[in-house]
Length: 497
Image (cartoon, rainbow, N blue to C red; front, side, top):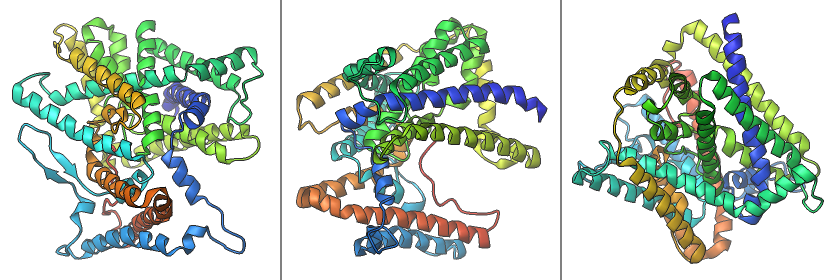
């Protein structure tokens, strides 16, 4: 175990710096997003509804006593437990649309559509604005069309989906930079409060003072750049990589704050954008090695690496009366504690049974890719692969996003939001296509024929559906634990990777 002390100390230092950056940026931008831009924060809304206190003389929240709640509870719980019968009777007619993807092929040149209904995604999507839901599924279909036509015409890189991924990253970059431009006055107020103590700027309701958040973010970002430099990167490439990752993480956080998607990842991380924009022959050997090692840490950005959670925590702080300064420390301390416990448990389990025996991608195949990439990129320094089309995809993504932003702000009734374009070909968007489409259709009809009143009344049905889904997953786990110990069934499979 002694051999782990030094690497765990330094890698944990980087992780804590990233966590601190996320929490400080969440404090800095909370008022802009929640009060000025009025983002909906669906995750926070669902959490507050679930945490609603009981009425006088009651033991449970009011929604538990509603028939609509139990109707919503019964549908997903009954459907999933129906599928559980198939655990015991292989020929039992199960609802496959809930368990497996149905692949719809439009043409051999076009990517397949992945169709599966997920109650978990559907319930959260109910709290997402209708125009965002429309944009999510429509822009995904347009991305499929774009890739298919590129295949047919022979235009673009050898894998056209790589071009669309690059297009999506620069779409996110414009989306984030525009958001920062819109927030410029608020950011100036934060800077004045942090540097000069501007009395007109009130930060009493924040998780941290603006001064602590400002300097906390600055020092954490500086530590990250210094860490990358000491690991082997040049100062310029370390700063560039950090900036690209911040764009990806902020984009992820804002998408989650607006759309409330529970399964989401950006199509390309900052590491991926760095590797695409900076061919190996332009980089030092140390930069190549460090960049590829960071793929394991930043490569997936499957959950935005704490940034979306930090913004939702800051938003939930609005529901707490009185001073909230202790909450930020509790959040960071809890996160660091979980890091220590998880790392210790992982090392202990690896020594006990062998990490290869875990059977997961990270410990059987993915752990080798990092070193394969290092060798591949070092060899690529002498024979770099030309990618002449990628800059055009990036410009197209940035330009179309700028156009969509203009149309959204210029015409209040414009139906398509640039958010849908930013993640048009991310895997979670592909895997959630049917759930998002049905959520859009359902909410559109609710608002069209019942208005906001019916929408609010049906929230209790959706909350019931969400808890019914969770109850079914727990019961399925208990069934596996009792009857199929060691040979369980994957029931909750959100499209993450």
